[in-house]
Image (tube, rainbow, N blue to C red; front, side):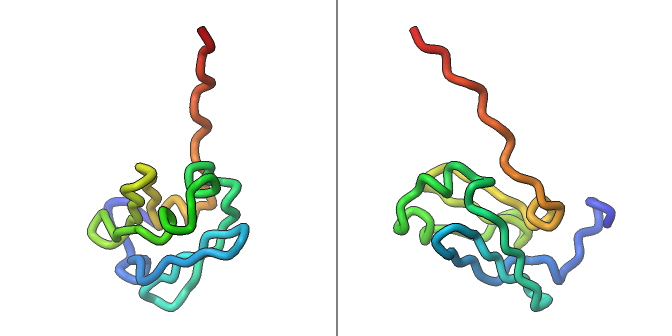
Length: 91
């Protein structure tokens, strides 16, 4: 898929969670299910924080304002886990 021409069917329709997975329903009827372990901010978030999500990026992204997390349907379809955050330096 060419990133400059997103597929309209890949827009987010709904987001839900199981105990250990994130599921994103797309407008074309597909559901993407990925392990929560791929997204540490979501894994560590409360149920309330997870439930407070917004569609972003013209429908191709999901934003969780309470935990400052953003995911795209392109990345989810690619199977791309979150980039590792740099280790914090102890002083």
